[in-house]
Image (cartoon, rainbow, N blue to C red; front, top):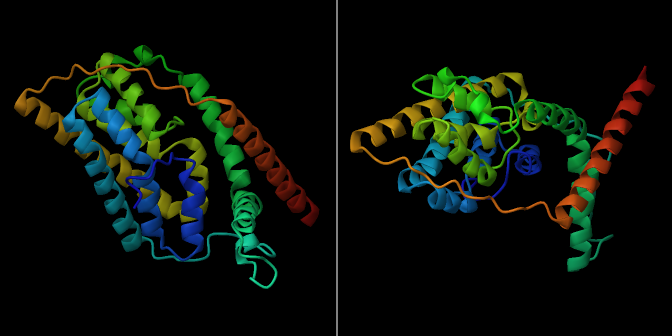
Length: 292
């Protein structure tokens, strides 16, 4: 279900949060968290336009393999199904309203959705998002997009797989925006297999999302989540490089320009998100201080 959805590593979090809260086990939640941001219909089409059919097919296939493997392993080795969301008073929010008090009109349902998103889900995730976004911003500033500064040992040979993991793991990028970056990595010496590792690890992880995933899955499952994602991605990358070498395929890709998605709606949405995240984070901090 997650592979075709065009959700990034952070926008997938509220959906996974609700799925987990509704009874989905840890393994299935982890599979959804991995497969959804790693690829989508839009990123698959962009992959084809910037790369070639091999990586276009390998990307969703590898996303499926990493997601399934992580889910199976988490269910096998982490059977703790304790409640992972702190239940607050009236935490069911507007979605649990009875039809006696609410009409069934489209407008009222839209209001219910907005209230539930801002008062229930966002309240649960706010402090984790705040910490994660601050760390992600700091790391992005430090790393930047100057890939030429990456040591040669991490750009070629077996070291390129590790280099792709180190570059992709902390960065806040979505499946679509990671595709032009992958072409830039190729230009500085990364192999197609290493690029695949970056395309899988980059969108599926960043510091902001990992703080929330820790809340959803807990420590043991998060360790399995990251370990499986990295190991299976590298195995898939090695397999892709083997295919390229065996068939002597060309790796001259097009470095295209990614369309500008930062319009007025994006800025307004970001302002609303900042306000809500800060408000709920300060409210939770105030309540915890009051307990002392």
